[in-house]
Amino acid sequence: MNGSDPWSQIVGWLRGQAPDMRESRELCRPARAPVANAASIDRIERQTTSTILVSWSDSTFGRYQDQMWRAGFARTSGVCGLTGAPVRRGDPVFRPLVRAGAKPLNALDMILAATLQREWSSRPADGH
Image (cartoon, rainbow, N blue to C red):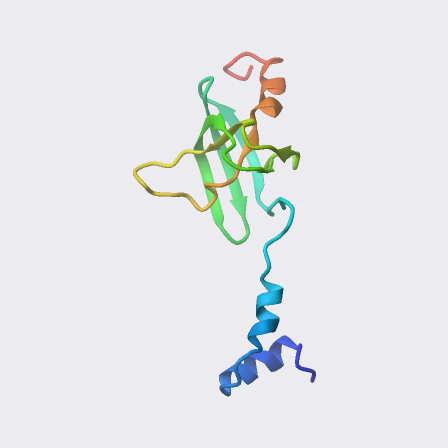
């Protein structure tokens, strides 16, 4: 087996052979462009003009059912969790609501407000 084989690396670490730190630093460089995560948004329900309920899930972060998101402005550039469209700093977005310092795992996710506005303009607030 070669040195890059994951099983060989694990066995080596258990035997006390430390990994090459230069190699691990090169592998952990941050992405140069915003990358959409693997989250899935199953349902969005409008509550008020400034709040929505989102059913959100991710295979590594878990699931939020009927999570409250609030309208605001993007603090950083990123990617819309619904469409994958680029989000620029200052764009109107919806973000998960942070309550009493309890930060949800998806706190940095955003949905472009313009995406939802197009949908809402064709329907009344109760969704019928």
